[in-house]
Length: 243
Image 1 (spheres, rainbow, N blue to C red):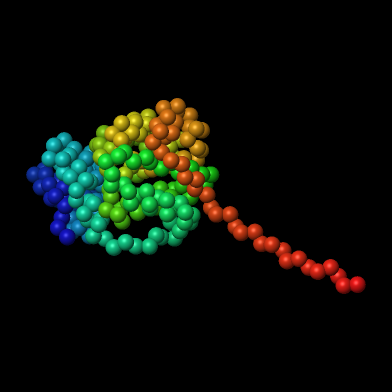
Image 2 (image 1 turned 30 degrees about the horizontal axis):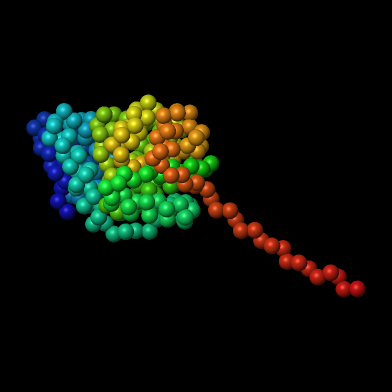
């Protein structure tokens, strides 16, 4: 698989700056092996690496355009070439019905001109909510969709916000802790009529921000993520003692 256009341009600009490949890797916060794998097409450009490219090289309009090109055009094609794999053990902890509903929802992502309502995943287990969010990102990639995941308390840079708004899917973990920049991102995504998957330890009506409540009420459907209840065992009835 050929190197992404974005990587080629980044390396060209780095050469103009007189940077070695080792220096380029250091500036991007990755090791030389990771950069080599991305260059060869063996590994995709990760979300953190995309953000760092925007931070280091975002002054170039060409680089900014190629970031969007990678997210919207190249990445879906590259993900589509991957074989569909079985979920890891971490995903297996997510109840089957929840995984099935997320997968069905993702299969219809961007398949209709009508705006698609998002998913609001709520539950008491932080571990299960995290697993469900990671499962959604994993499945989106398997279906050739570009997914951006952010945590509620993240501070979102402008370059990252642009990617998150334009991506096929935005996943927000723990919306009850949403920072001001994440709230702005949710509003922008909603205004653009782009679907989201949101996790929260409380239900939609329990969120402290009234505007977020209105957005999620209008644009998401709720799925409760909870471990399945163990089946109760009935104690066999013993016949009365024979007289």
